[in-house]
Image (cartoon, rainbow, N blue to C red; front, top):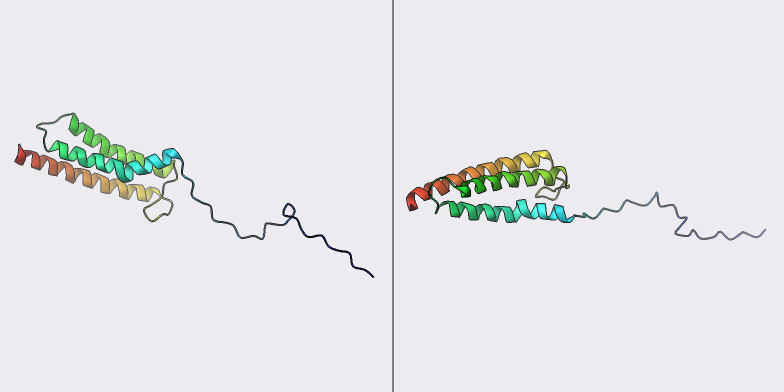
Length: 126
């Protein structure tokens, strides 16, 4: 009795359910990239520049409003990053609202300290 040849499975009919899942590459859109670069880098540089400019101004001005608007805006950008843009924590894991709260508290503490230092230097310099 002759054996019938068994056709080799083609790639189109092969069962792929047994294959191990491949890790997904992290894709980041343009808006997500801009948001992350803003709260991680550019926003902090702008906040530092505003802090330095506040030391040379006398009295309350638009620069003070810009400083606090930027500080609060950075917290808002981080919130958007976490809730809508799939943000990551600093260790590369998906960010949670707990990460956002930590960032918010640190940012507010830094902003209060920087603003206080700027006002202190303003009175010494001016």
